[in-house]
Length: 86
Image (cartoon, rainbow, N blue to C red; front, side, top):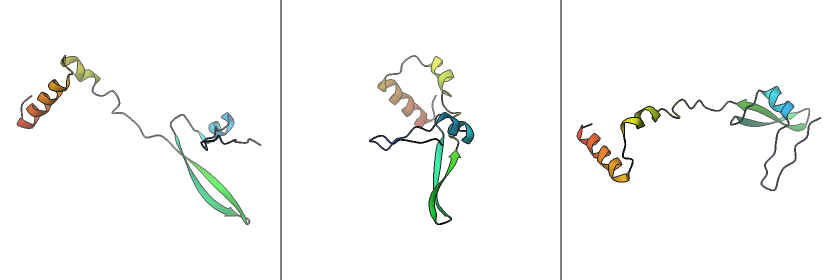
């Protein structure tokens, strides 16, 4: 039987076999549900996959057209956008 040991920060590492059986990958979330089975308190683990982050890196292509990334340039761009300019 696999065991877990908690650190002082209440963190634990799941054994590789448990992660594989649950289909867990780094970044996934595990939902814990308390239950009583045959008079004994048990916890059900339910994997919740990490949310897709398709937006990460989506602005990289747009950064080629901008050479000045100073706060002044950012503020000017925001102001132009509010006025309807480009």
